[in-house]
Image (cartoon, rainbow, N blue to C red; front, side, top):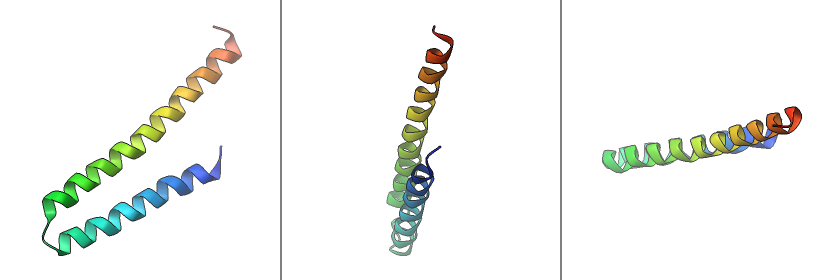
Length: 64
């Protein structure tokens, strides 16, 4: 497993949380919530891509 992936996900989380705090302080809670949901979706897309790669590797190992 590549450690850079963990840093990428952590970096996205840190940036989203900073922007969330800034938007909340500016009384823009709706935009902060949308930003948080967008961040979760981005991270889920990365994770889903990794799961797809895992299934392809398993398929290659068992030659299905």
